[in-house]
Image (cartoon, rainbow, N blue to C red; front, side, top):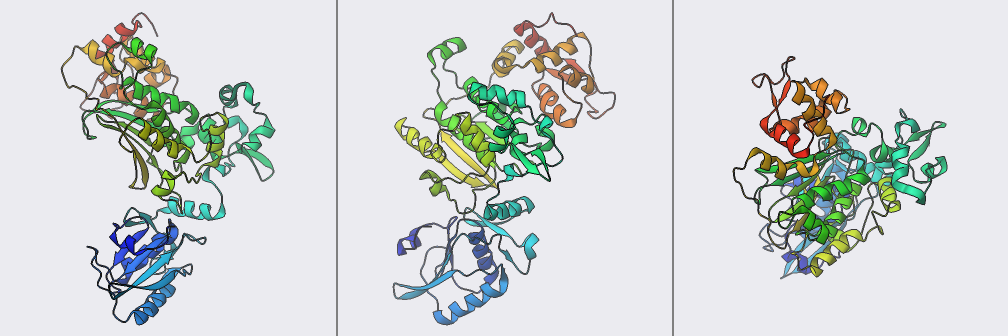
Length: 486
């Protein structure tokens, strides 16, 4: 942590700095000390108003003793910060320096270990939920979430053939190698997959980690209000990197001739930077969180990529920019490195900022927002979408034809013959009849007006079926699949 200097009094409050006028409201102050200890440490300065006016502390020795007693009585485990008296402009300040704690999580005794744990998010203190409390404990123990065993599974639950295909001839995935890569772990006398192994290569990975997928969207304009196109990617994490880049390329073409763009490799977005950001998001995501997939958002003036999970304790955004790195998911990171998706740990973020400067791009931004880390990559020139009415075939061509999957075509083709139920559509696509598959594979076809409900007024009706729309017909015609039968 940067040593305290009087110059910090001119800085805005943030992850590692907060100002308080006095000790008149001790609870918010104590929350801040707990949050500092559980996060990256920080300085709490007493005797300074919110607008940076130095008012000082009356009777500073008495207030120092009172503060020490408050900390001892209110915070568990015991927290012993460094407290110093500092005189500036003839006025005395109390400077409380808190280091990242090796005994985290700390909590307020009055609220207990379940409700009294706080972390620092920007210039605010955020109550930690159960998953974040567990991560704080793991970070002290040096145990990664993705290293944890899954005792109810076996090696048969991993798609070793798909993994071997990715590794190629560079490595044979025998039992010894799987143990070395921590894809397998010994648990009560038997070998079981780790969470990292299932996240990477699990046959039913989404059943165990339903939010380990990627949501990609292209929006009109510079606000996330009006969506133009979207996909949801649930491939194994190493394969998902290229799929995200395909989606971004699709919406970054210069001119209308896709083959010409590919031949010249001319793109209007910084692909190498975006590749690093995507990899960073997948490697550092907190997969213990629920309801929070990795998100990729393409706007006219920027691309935002965010992953669930705050920065690990002891890390700040400035640390990241300087090349410091802490690996949240060591198993995933190791496999990504073995697959040459990562060149060297800790260099990716620094390389992103260096390359952006070389390309003349505005500096990328990193933000912690709502228990997530967001990487914002500005574009050198805006890429605007035009809203205009087009024939159905042209709409389909621009929105989906570049990445139409066999699953989509099979479901549309099935409805060409007759109306189909949800179960029939999923069976045709080779998918289990579960809500998650409906949400990811059928619902988007309704949103894109490729399919329509036969009973639109009763979406949940047990008699509900799905029919092909004019746009669906246009897509089948365009892709040359109208002759298929099911």
